[in-house]
Image (cartoon, rainbow, N blue to C red; front, side, top):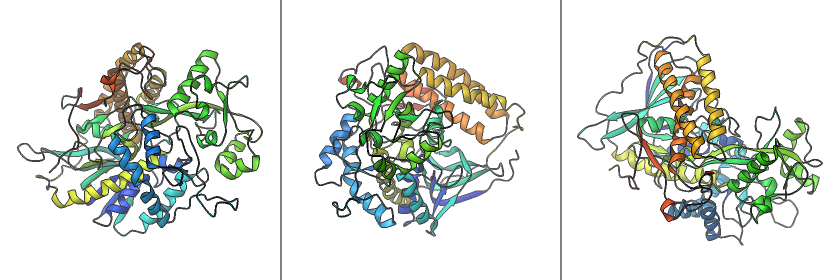
Length: 556
């Protein structure tokens, strides 16, 4: 792969990632300056695009902000930041109105009794129907509208097939700020060149890291790039032990962990063992509508106890015409794979789905590094705590996209200029690799050890084994990385190994079970002393250390 000449481009707002959070930020920031949105593959390829369930917000008269807050706090198991929860929920209706003005069409009632009111769904952990949806492809509907708006905006440029490699950070000894994020080095996937892209404000909107695990509902782009880059640059990371496993992904060799929306259970779907018996009420009085951590753990326990490959999601008790109308995408995909959910239960298993932690931010999306913001799944905002409430992720993306854009506009007016020109990418003496088997082998090994040792149920012994092995793998990757020219697979392997290290490190620190983190050696939540975030950063010598820096961050 040729390195070619370096190309430098400078904008006001450099957005890395083109999902819901990134595009929301871009549309707001474009009112105040130039925006470049960088996507690693085709525009629109993101976890946001795959979101089936919808976006939770208070719309119904019988609902309230207080109720939504309480549901979110209960799901978060004591680790949500109440002020962040309140802000996100109270901004929800305004954010929805903006989406409606852009042209998003959420499903409305069709029975003649609702006068065109929104058809609100209910999902696990919610005490009211408050999930706005567009059939069962809500994310795709929203993304298409936002992409069209971004493409029509003369201040926004979308650049596809560019994979961010590392943040550009200027060290400024004796000055304030002492360190400044100036942009990113990015691999042009088509040409093989590493280009320099500069931004007065750099926004990580890179999504999650489901590909760290062997089985995931996430698209292939979810390799934790933003988390890994931020960690290498020295940003504070938070709560990465809390990885949400979606309870119901279709079990089929050709399904690639196709997600079966939680809304199926919200409409009355039952979870059954292979012998047809129900089991969820043995684990939680809410039954199939318990929060995702409870349901996924119950399924995992039953599968391991019984030796079965899957449990069953039974929708046959509902009207068939309603199922086809409410879930057209799921119905069609299941038919393609040989299942008719109107007539037979569907085999399901849990799969890695969502990271509740990430790059630590304040309520404005600021990270601990001046000039760097993080929004969406890549960020640890304090909204989700130890377990995300269903359909709160899209809400967080649109709210924090707006909040970060407001703050970044102000940052633009006072941000310092770099002291020296940004150095071009230096490949050193790297050559083309003739040992790509090393990359594929380590890809497989990282994902398998994370699934087996750092999955739904963990133990101290499993975590120690995972830690020792991932450190050996990371050393092999470091050596390979500096000896050979970059490829997308190598960049992503480096990133998933970094995220794996962070997840294991954080999980080792938490000697209790809380939310999504279940350690068999400590099966119950600890006392009040454990109701705190797990904060970590990487020192310049490469070691991960605990950090207790206070929020909000002050860049001025």
